[in-house]
Image 1 (cartoon, rainbow, N blue to C red):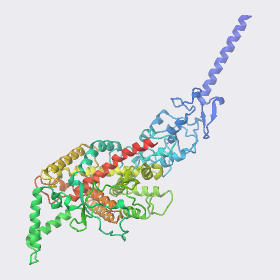
Image 2 (image 1 turned 90 degrees about the vertical axis):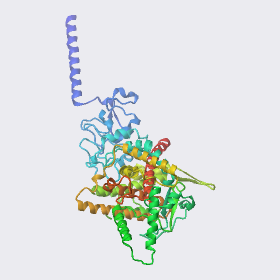
Image 3 (image 1 turned 30 degrees about the vertical axis):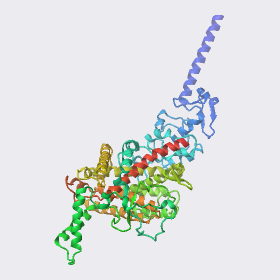
Image 4 (image 1 turned 135 degrees about the vertical axis):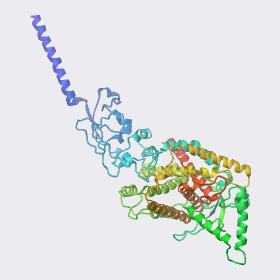
Length: 615
């Protein structure tokens, strides 16, 4: 009897094991789990809880388990925009490959938490389309203001950017979406990345260029701040005390700078030029007003020289009685309080009338333009992308210059106006207002990327003009031979560092089409920029006008250099050239203008540290 009982028990046990095996296999094939392990997510999406998740941790293999609240910040931007669930029933399951910013095609987007909308709204693309891989169709927030990222055409997000950005996000503050989170990667229209520029500038260029601009040859700038505005009635000069520019008495100007301007760099050429000027004065002052053949030839040479220069700026007449020397070190660029409609009108005229833009297209965040709704940005960048490279570059240069000036104002802000002296220093809140992603609806990062683009343009110009200064007779003459030698040595050190930079902008891609069309386009480019230099005479604040004129002339000189490559290649080694020359004013503006860009990038690093400390 006991044998029959034992056999029956064995058959029953075998049947139980077989049945359990069949059920487990059916669950696995249909991806079904017992109802007792399901719970409702507060956001509305049901997440499958793993037995190992009791401690609130997530399975490292990507299982859907109970999410740690702090993990939401890492994953919010990875979810799809549609808010739908995967047909397989998995809720918000992530693939391990999602760490790089891409989403597993089989991953479910889950129901979106309403609180995530604020963090993600600036990430969305204008078209709102989704990538076939499941990406949410967001626009690359690091795209520069002038152009869009090449991968952005289909509305996809740059996968390589997400892994760099995730560590930058804070807990739950709106300031987590700082412009620095997306200020990374390769710039548009060139093959250089932000990180390489930061290291190169902050460690190699900035310390040398700061020291160079403190030398006598580069600290004194002759400028006419009394020229009337040629485009609208003058508002009158700013009455704020910090707008005032302190001119430099003639007695304090180095004798070598006072004795001759224009193309006098060394003592010997200056003496030769002085004799020539005396002869010309005698000829022109003779009783017989008829010009000699020699004078006619001189005027012809001057005309050919002027025609060959391709000046991009309206240069001040240095012989005008209204022109005066200014010590740039005693009149630093800083926020003086000049703002509002007068300042807006200057920049509005620059952008709206001189950047090849039709009036039907509105620039984002333009305070003087009528509001057209949220589609202004989409329309503007669609127009910008349709421009040729040259016109797109023009806009990015102006935007980069504007960004650089704004950074200077934020870094040297009037913090306290006391009775004894004013206190100046960095203002993180002002910086955030001008460049933060949330504050500017994504414009801040584009503006900063344009600053880097402008830096590359002027860096390339310095690389191109190096042979001009490497000639032995160029001495940057001030009258102090020891100081002059040290100044040139420092300048050559800067050129040597620039030559070591491997990722220069290639200007040969510009104006490279049909010769006639390219010539017309180049002339339009030149005239538009020359007009901008004239607008600088409409700035109401004298100190703002000073630095606006200097930096505009510096950029204009850089453009002149870039488009005079053939003339520079033909420079004689031991004598001045009639084909390509730079006046002292242009040299001072070029070096100081680039110094301002270098300072801006260095100040960005300081603001990054300040914002991290305040977080």
